Each structure stands twice: as C-alpha cells, then as structure tokens.
Length: 335
Image (cartoon, rainbow, N blue to C red; front, top):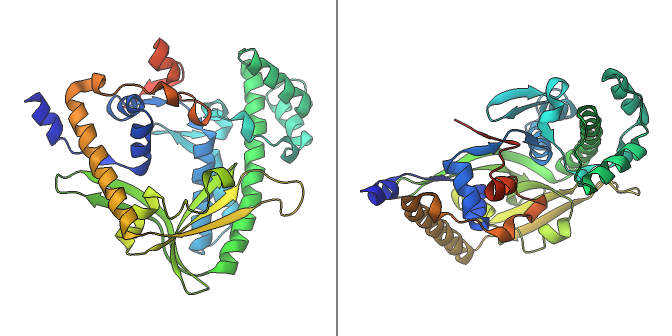
C-alpha cells in the first residue's frame, strides 16, 4: 500500500530539479520533500532575476527605464515567501567573493555607507583584503564588517548589471525584429499526471528572418559553460522548442567579468538546432528520472543517498554542513 501511494503521487518537476536530482538525490529530497531551504537570498539568483526583469522590459518596450526595473528588482527581494529589501535586510543576501569587482565601486559610496552604519571609513581595497584573510582563517566577519562587505558586493553587482543591460539593449535593437513571447510558462503533463514546468525566456524573429527561442544567461566563463554545441544539446531548450514548435534555439550569454579595455562587456550568441534524435533523448531522460524518483519515494529518505562528489560543485552545496553535521545554520524549513 505504501509503495502504491508513493507511485501514485504526482510529481511537478523542472529542469533545475532534474539537475539537482541527478547531481545529488539527497539534495533533491531535502529541498523538495523536506522543504529545507536557505534562509538567505543568493546573490546570483537575485542578480539573474533582476536582469531577466529588465530585459523583459526592453523586449516588451514598456514605458520607463529598464535601468530602474533592474535596480528595483535588486533592492526588493523575497526569501521563502517573506518580502525583504536591501535597506533593512542587506545581511539576508549571500554574496560570492569572486563576484566582486572593486574597481566598479566608488570610494565615496563606501565612505557614505560607513557613515550610515556609524563606523570609521575604511579604504575598500584594504578592507576586502582583510575579509579575504579572515575567510582563509575561517573566521567570521563581525556584523558591521559583514554589512560593509555586502554593501561593496552589492554596489559591484549593481554597476555590472547596468553596464550589461546597456549592451543587451543595443544587441536587441540591432538584431531583433519582432517579439513573440517573453517569460512564457511551459507546463507539460504526462499520462500519469506528472508535470514538467518551466519558463522560456523569449521567442523572437531576428532581423535575418529566423524565428529563434532564446535563453538568456550570465556567466563568468562563457567558453567553458557554453561551448558551440551547448544550445543544440540543451535539455531545457529542447523541451521548450518542442512545445513551441521551433527548432532554432540559442543562448544569449553575457560575460559577468567586466574588462578594462573595450568591449568592457562581452556577449556571445550561441545558436543551435534541436533534432528529433535529441528530443527523443531528452524526453526519455525525463521519463526515466520521473519514474526513478517515484519508485524511490516508497523508500523514504533512505532512497535518496548523498553524492559526496557534488558537495563542492559551483562553490559548494548549501546543505553540506547539514548533511554531515546536522548543522541548521543558514537553513529553515518552509511550509
């Protein structure tokens, strides 16, 4: 009976969930079944969502400034259903040290923030080096230090985003003839009532006359993560292309590393064609993963072992300390 109930359970999967499951079944279980989530906002997710909102504004030619749309989305965010803002909740954002470009942050802005939090002004380069040394010693920053660090990291991302959006706006004006859809929800249901859900970024007709389904990405290493064949071999683009009846797809990738020389912001447009063979592989994989998850649900948590090889992927898993030590720091259960 127990197995039958679990097998009958309807799953709602997405491309990111499939990636999570194949990367580490334990992570999928804790996230989707136990609903154990970070109690902070990752800066990469915050930044990506704000860029998406601003590009949607550009594509739909809405009134007002796409710069302001970006800034508003960076300043107001949500953590597990709770509304937050940078003014009151700056410490609820988790920033990556590798994402900071101190050359984009004015010392005057740092001085003003130090005055706001009532500490003596600190020279930004010296302060960031101090933070780096504390990380090496695994020594946490004091609260005011963490606030200043987060402020510098946020200012860096804000300036990066504004520069990237100017280049994206130029690219869109130069290359896009017509916009067909933006942030369209995709919901595919199989015979058992399971769903695959996602949001395609945009479908456009290029000035060349070609209709293309495009996924917008930001990356610190475009060559590594988006090689020439990546669009044609993408699971996500394949699924969306099938639903939209489009075979021409592309990644529009913005390099997050701002260069000293021109062009300071680099774009890569990586085109591909989705084949029937690729679609067969994609939907076979989704079917296999869906069935495997449903079968393992009958075993409970034991059916979802951790994959220790993935603990340090992409900067480290936020659940690592919990999995090994039961440490709930930075985590909360979400209803």
